[in-house]
Length: 80
Image (cartoon, rainbow, N blue to C red):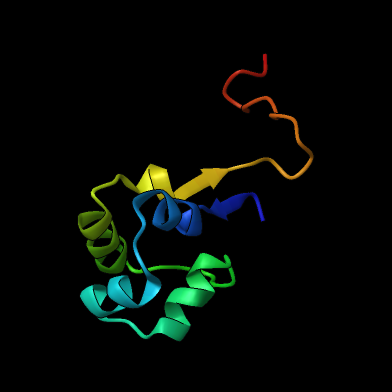
C-alpha cells in the first residue's frame, strides 16, 4: 500500500508510550498497535484528530505517501 503509517516513529520521537496514547484517544492498545503497524484499512478522523492533539502534530506527520514502484507517476492532469 502506498500509504505508510509513521505513528511508531512519532511516538518514539516524543517519548510517548502506546498505553498513554490509547487511553487518551479512547481506543484499545491492540487497535493502536494495528494502526502503528499499518494493518488497518482506515482510521476515523475523530481518532486521527485525538492522536494529533495528544502528540501535538499534524496528520501528515503520521501518514506518508510512498509510491509502490518507487517513482512518481505523471498526473493525468499533466499529461498532454
